Amino acid sequence: MSHRNLPSDDELIPKLLENDETAYRQVVSAYHGMMIYIARSIAGDAIADEVAQEAWVAVLKALPNFERRSSLKTWIMRIVCNTAKSRLRHESRTVSIEDSLNESGDMISPTRFDERGHWSSPPSIWHAETPDSLLASTELQTCIDRALKELPPLQRTIVSLRDIQGMDMELICKIFEVSESNARVLLHRARSRLREAIDKYQRNQD
Image 1: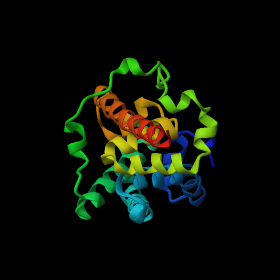
Image 2: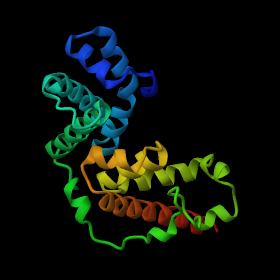
Image 3: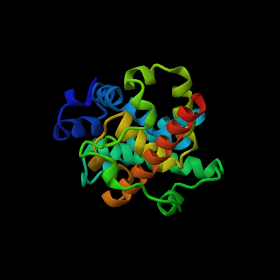
C-alpha cells in the first residue's frame, strides 16, 4: 500500500493502539520498504533486515508514548535511523554517523545545482551520452554503486533518499534531526564525490 492511501494519523494511531491487525498490515505495507532502504543506506545490506525488524519492535513498544510532535511516518523513520546508527556503532564500523557532520573537505557550491537539486552543469560524460544510456551502462552503474558505498553513512543515506528516492529535504531533516543547512552540506559533498567518480570513469574510457 502506498503511504498516500493510508488513513490519516488521527484514524490510524488509535487503531494501532488497539492492536488492529488491518491497521498494522497497512502501515507495514506502506513503510517497510523505506525502512529497509534507510537501514541499508546507514548500516549496510548485511544487517538491513535485522535493523528494520528491531525498529518495528521499538515502534510497537514506544507507540503508547508517541507524543505526535511529528507525523507517524517521520517518527517511524527516525526510529529506523536511530536503530541503524546503534547497530552501526555496535558492529564497530570505522566511520561514525556523527563524524559525517564534521567531515573535512571542500563543500561543493550550491550554485552547481538548480532549484530542483539537479546539476546545473552535468558531468562531462553526459555531454556525449544521454542520462538514460549512461544508467544502462553496467560498468558505470558499478562505478556509482562503489562510490556510494565509499561515502560516509549519513552522506550516502541523504543523497540516496533525495536523489534516488525523491524524498523532500524537509522530511529528510526531520528523520535525521539535522538542520537544513547541514543536510544540504552533506548532500552537496555526496554529489561532488559522485560527480568525481563519474568524471574519473569518463577519463578512464578515453
